[in-house]
Length: 450
Image (cartoon, rainbow, N blue to C red; front, side):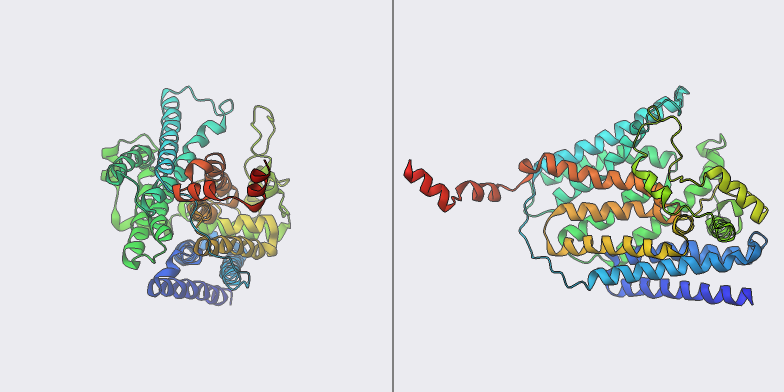
């Protein structure tokens, strides 16, 4: 009976994902919306991995944990679709406004941010390679400097795609491509999946959103498929590279035929096992965080040097150590931390229990509103906000809201600060001249009175 109920839930999840992805492919403008990307991720984490876990790793799914482990993600997926639909059907209208920003200055700022991110990453890697990095003493802000490069790439790319074209655009394209290569090479060399996903999302989303034209579905979906395959290759490469192997050993050990198989039948790499164990354990012991882990994220910006006993990222009053112990006691296995993460759905259940679908509904509704503003207001700040969220969605779904919060806030804050500090320089010449030539009646009368 439990097995039948699981497969019914799994079929519903897979069916919704296939339906929304097929709809996006047939209607290209829907590809740019978060539900399409969310369904693609759900089909992997709660479709393929759930299928493989049930067939090959059923011994890890104790006490019928796969039932709740499939039911909660299905509810959260439905909440995402409903939140987005409600945001699009809102009666509030946004009046079209003329573009305020454009030009060469935007490219310079974006390009500079990209180089700053590359320098920050190189400096951290150099210290790590020398063996002189002490995590308990080093500032996390130094490491976070790398994330500055992603909004910089979005700003620079937007400035080159915006009309009217800026002078020397071909040369600026070449320079930006070289900077991107410098920025991303260390991430590819160290097989980091999150930065690769963010860079590809920026390259896929920014052009159609800037030009307000639906993308070619074959090119867009092909780009997502390539980055997905690369991320799976990265996982396989880590098994050799992170254990001291050389790149020649790593390439020799890669087996394209086993990429998906290993992600499904190996418990250390199947996030679905951890998803089920966390949800089942919390359901049985009732130790919910009640949002304290997410609220603590707003205090996590305090440096550890000023707050030595600061909790771990996303940790509430229910400590990670206690959680791991409870999972081992409830399931008989301490899988967490061996390779796979818990997943965003499981961590949201840890925070809010059966109310976690409202969390996903609110998130989807909020960024659905942002997406609507992109099409009704020609203000790039909304575009940067949405693209930044989509970049962080990989960490959100595969790991947790806490893991996505820090890079996500960097993606949101940097463009806001740039356009607040340099808004006057970024305004178009036409707008500036119009403002200087305009005189209000009161100002004219005051001049005549003088």
